[in-house]
Length: 513
Image (cartoon, rainbow, N blue to C red; front, side, top):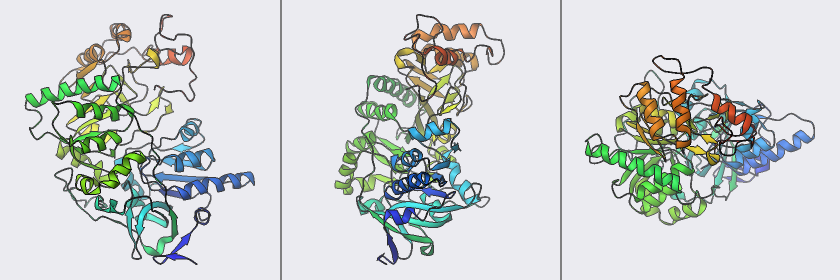
């Protein structure tokens, strides 16, 4: 048998054949970065073949976050996933979850490590992990994400390693890997700066658990978000003005505070637009994902450093990083997601966070994850930890979608991921509402006047006036009228003059954006 560093060298087909029906399989990867590729793709092909022969085959899938097309999309299209946690972003898998064909556990990313270690998901039968190198004594040098991979390597019964020659071996110089100790003896996480290093530059696996190694030479697959659009620019203007006012008032220190930014087109564009603002000083990032705009701002020295758990960037941008590692290595550190989402560290550093929502209600309850309160989009992800524990959590979203047929500000969100007690700042392209120190009615007026689109303001104001008086005013008979209108007629506004009225939207497979 051919070997590599003492481990069996397998083909992707041989490796995939080691995965039994019903197994719980943990994959490396975070936001699509650093995910295994050859083995899960072959596993999907084998699943189809088994189904064609009338054999049952489906697995339970764990990851740090979303795994990209090679894992979630390929396996879902092959009908090979029965259960999934803690986050996904696959169109095919999303549809299967919403049809109740796949059981989905949507959870805060900071909870994943302890949940796996405690055995609440049952045993992890197999981990399939992408790495730059595996040494004979079990050191695993990971690629473009750390995520929950060190935990998976520790607790999985068996392990398959994909050695990916596409990636720079110098990625190990960015890695800072530690696994937090168990409660009740867990020490505080001693991070005092976004670039603080705590651990080693490799993960560890017991060599006896390694079934074999598969060689690959394939980049992560990401498309560019493109330039910031007008909505991102207007939101960025409101946030820049707010931050500048906070600095003048002395509520943000002169050296500034670390910034966290969620993923997605709007937030990526927002970061780029913030970088263009001369009143925002150079930033330090304490975040989860390094996106395309962040790399460009590092190159421009508008961002000084970035701590994250993965680099989810297009291949041409990643090439710029690999071609200039002397510049990027001192400026980027990649950590496990349990460290990046540690509530204690977020509070200690005083993180300013920016995360994009699906919708918000007039009192500041925010929905990140579901449409109509029923259909999953992707999941709550890591936003909750930063909103609950950040110094200045900022929620952003466009005020309308689908040409005005959808309002992102509604009377009551049918699903709540972060509630009014945690949400402090909300912004759309219409304006920004500072909710700190405001009671419910003051919050409602601020959100309607400053964040709702003008075409929806009259409706939202009438809703308040027609609601039962209480500490929080609501009309339980009409609080979801906008959502019901959209399901029935394709537009949230109840009158026939609404944009696009009568163009009914299918509830299945249709979204806000």
